[in-house]
Image (cartoon, rainbow, N blue to C red):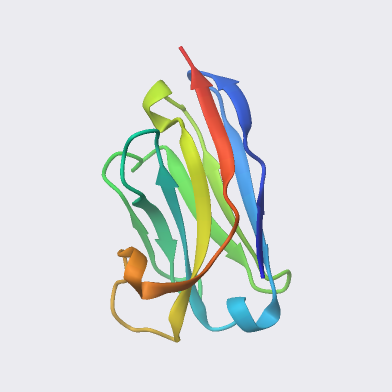
Length: 125
């Protein structure tokens, strides 16, 4: 129901754009998020966008460098990643909220019921 793409190998300072295509039922009126999991580390939230697209949340480590957006006509969420650093190397997962039109901030894995397969981003130094 969620298909992530766009990962790859990039040099430090470069950019990548991740995409996540969803089915209508797993996208419409749901908050969407990107998480990542680096080798040997727990999965962590990267960015979240509200179902309406009007509100976003970013982890401190990516603020000012990453931008999350959504195209509700295409049922797709994006993560534009600029000024990439080696510490951004991870498998990136898109996720859809378990709750319709949630009004509270949702930054934990437990809040998301639908997950993509992950796409690997490798940033070389």
